[in-house]
Length: 207
Ligand code: GRF
Image (cartoon, rainbow, N blue to C red; front, side, top):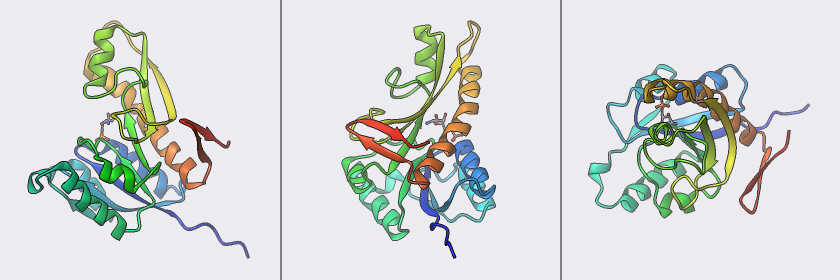
């Protein structure tokens, strides 16, 4: 008898609303991704994402930055939590804190981030505003592996949306988020199915 592969053990790191977390949970619960979210970690005790996790019976950890001196000390504690859960993939879903080498080296090519622009354009904070201010006709979102830079890691998937002349940051963000909720779970599905490999900095996907 064939036995199915064990579900991929995933941790999702959040700071806020958690709409991406929700999209991922929904696809897992629908049986479309062979993964299990072992824990949700938030650096913000008030993040709505925590309530979303609890509603789905996912264990949550609050790890506040203010309790740690240096960011590397925070990351050491974070790595310990994630290793205790045997995490195989770390998903940054609106986690508003830059990771140090401690985290990046502990999970090589096993940390994914979603960025609300078409990288390498508009990295860093306020990507949607950067895109509007620049006057681009198209923007979108990028799922990428996290490396030692800020939003510089190998690109897994991207989705494009048009930018309208009368867009506000809010309107553009909502249009981009609709795509985030589609491509982020998709990237996790591909990872869980072992369909992603990396050659130099190019991500190869087996379709
Ligand atoms: C998303 O727009 C994502 O691109 C950015 O942070 C936001 C998180 O939103 N990295 P949510 O908490 O998943 O709703």
